[in-house]
Length: 151
Image 1 (cartoon, helix red, strand yellow):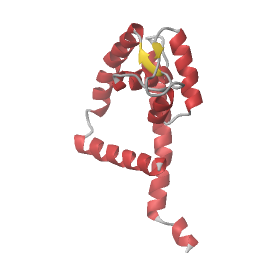
Image 2: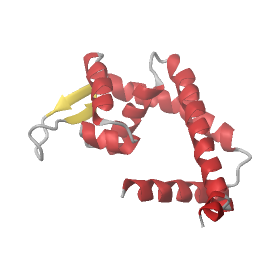
Image 3: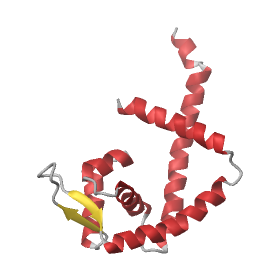
Image 4: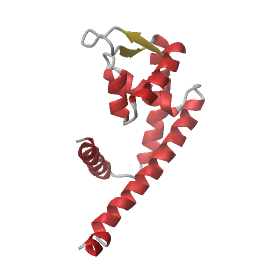
């Protein structure tokens, strides 16, 4: 039984996918750092700015951490630095006394706009030869795996 599992084509494909996703993550972080560097940011800050901007009404640090798949402590450290740098604002949370809402300052919104002006052409350039259907199927699979591992 165990030998059958070890030689399963699905197991090998899945593990190859996992390793490829690890590599892709590293490449995306490098690309993000390269694009954000001209704006004085890192990809870590970019991710936080993006999550907060897309939330529209502020998010808690634990909420940002969940979206990014990172620890609350790591996100808290980044948010604290970004708050000191004037990119983020902490506001009282009417739903939770100890977990403040994080929102973008005007400078944070300007950074988000500048990041989008770099990100959007990059996304178009790097997917020009990829059919929409492939992107949709890939996104479905990644979301399905995320859901499986979150529960």
